[in-house]
Image (cartoon, rainbow, N blue to C red; front, side, top):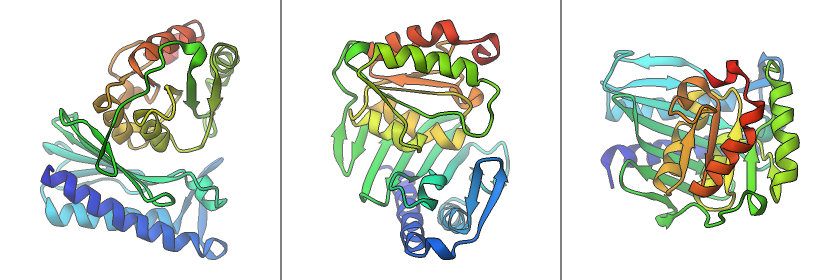
Length: 268
């Protein structure tokens, strides 16, 4: 196993421990609203600090892009950059709704290189290294084999903070409800992508995500044999935050199905 992946696993498990302990004291947590419908708890911040300390102790020259603390490390243009979401699915966590995770990705010269997603509720560890395949608890995983959109189970996330593209999204949703075997919205984009990599869903789409929500999950999907793009079918998903992913055949049909609803603003 790649030594940097090993360090990321250590960091993710340490953060998972912080989250699990916090889940026993939900009524005593300090919670702040970052923006409308967007919450951060002291657990997010503690988990993030544990991750950053673990990574920078091992690799002091690396830079960090983290949800709660922004960019840190030696240089913003460092060759290696860690992209971290210490608790993806905070709203779920605060409601004791058991769908949240730790997401850690490593970019090497702006390319996805290593990925860890840790689900502390189920003690599931998803890992991937570029060119090395994707794994769940050391077992190789592959995207699903379904090849028709009508048979596919599709993950998504509803707009919850920025409602600029709500009409476009509801158009996509309306069409896909009729063209698939079901849509699911569990509430953690990182875990949604990990589940897609493991074949539990066949596709995923969402508007306006952040790099830390999707970086690790995208590498998992790619290494599990799936495809990932932005709404224009290009590789600009980390920058735009608009993402379509799926097993190869479902991906093509999913991209086609949302196409009529993609506005010029979403294509860029």
